[in-house]
Every structure is written in C-alpha cells, then in structure tokens.
Amino acid sequence: MKEVKGNPLAQKSYSFALEIITNCKLLMNEKREFILSKQLLRSGTSIGANIAEANGAISTADFSAKISIAYKESLETKYWLSLLKDAEYISLKDFERLQPLADELSKILFSILKSTRLKKN
Image (cartoon, rainbow, N blue to C red; front, side, top):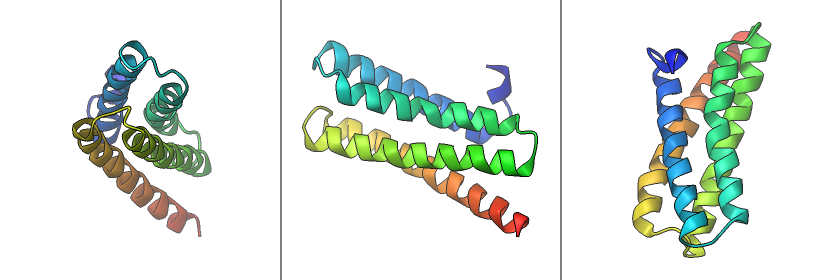
C-alpha cells in the first residue's frame, strides 16, 4: 500500500490490522466464535482506516476528528482483546502479543490528538 510507506503510524496500524484479521480468522474457523470476533475485526481494522482518512484531511479539524475516532477504536480494540482473553477465546500468548501493539497505537494517537487540540486553542 503506497500511502503507508514513509508513515510510521500508518505502517503500524496496517500491520496491526493484518494481525487482527489473522486472529479473527482463527476465532471464526477454529473457535467458531463469530460475534465478538467481528467486533474485534471491525474496531481493529478501523484504526488504520481512520488514520488513512486523517492523512487525507482537508482541515486541521477534520484531521483531529479522524484521529479522535482512530483513538477511540484503539480503546475499543483493547476492550475486545481483554474480553476475548478472559473468556478464553484467545490465548494469553496472543493477548500479550496484541495488547501492547494496541496500547502503542493508543498512546501515539492520544499524543497526536493532544497536540492537534492544543494548536486549535
């Protein structure tokens, strides 16, 4: 994907989305879990989609709004990962691999959001 090259946040979110897709495939095919896995799939891939939209923003307010959505989706993804771990749908090993990635994205997005909001005021 051309837009991802040279943009570390876009690269991280794209790689994370691929990890989420792989894990959701396993949840659906092996665990036969469809509801929670679709929630995880939606929120985990939405992070990168909103970052891509932010990169094409037409204003600072538009950029900030898309980053805000990406941030909220990262928090939601962390919730679904925790729930799936506690419900024993995903292994502790998978959780310990995915949760730090989601946490890193959350921290980066929050930092960007904070700086764009400060510039607005």
